[in-house]
Image (tube, rainbow, N blue to C red):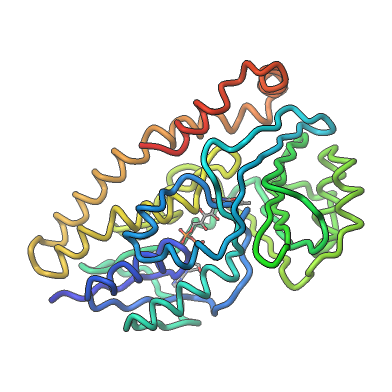
Length: 337
Ligand SMILES: Cc1cc2nc3c(=O)[nH]c(=O)nc-3n(C[C@H](O)[C@H](O)[C@H](O)COP(=O)(O)OP(=O)(O)OC[C@H]3O[C@@H](n4cnc5c(N)ncnc54)[C@H](O)[C@@H]3O)c2cc1C
């Protein structure tokens, strides 16, 4: 049997590792960091089906989430939409999910090495789940957990040059995760930096509420220097963000990370059993990804810029407020093959 080596143990790499171990494939996973760790992420999982989570063997990990059925959307100070989510969504911290998946992988006999950065060196059997590529980009992602918000469901607040999502996670906490255009005049650290970005983006009501919330400063994390869309390939077999980074407001990167691992699994099992050559596994997987993701990647890439364009914002605001925006239609198109 051929062995598989997964480089990068985020959601995509870990879910794939669990799936392969469930099918008896010898699997090694190399992760640069250590578990548990906080990551910049909205921590709102929406779109991936329960069948896919069960197939991957990780449904029990996700089942520990807060379940959400409601969403509300603000543009600066004005609430433009409040609705039920067309499908239920889950809220769970990356601190917990990644740690639980890593344990499950090891319990299933996976070989896990942490604190080790694997350097580019492609070979048959190597899968890359190393996340988004660092490159020159104009975005900064910031996140922190708040302890006493009393927020229900998902709230999205769109400001002048960025947005923030608030989502209930485990233990009654709320994840506050924003994506903003880098503004060098905005200073601070931890929760204070997020507060200053909210103010600079015209989200004044929210910034006042945010200031009063008790925050878990240890959960603060930040990331910058990336851009959305296709990522420069690290290797030939990439899962999750390592292959394509979808913008968070219109996309669902965590679901895509899990779905890409679910698509990858069967090809890798055939390769491991020596039923197909590595090149066939790569080709088959890439074709499946193109069929599964192409529509939502195009739509999401086209919609995201509307949020930061004056006319686009007016259009979104007016159509959402008057009920003309086909929210449910777009929601499904952005989440289905
Ligand atoms: C601001 C923001 C908000 C978001 N909000 C949401 C949301 O609400 N819902 C949603 O579905 N998605 C959201 N996303 C997207 C989501 O976070 C990603 O799509 C998801 O984390 C992708 O998982 P991954 O496993 O591909 O990558 P990651 O989770 O980034 O994991 C990659 C791992 O690889 C490791 N690594 C990197 N290089 C190496 C190396 N050379 N060797 C070994 N290990 C390495 C890293 O340490 C890391 O643990 C958001 C993204 C951003 C930026």
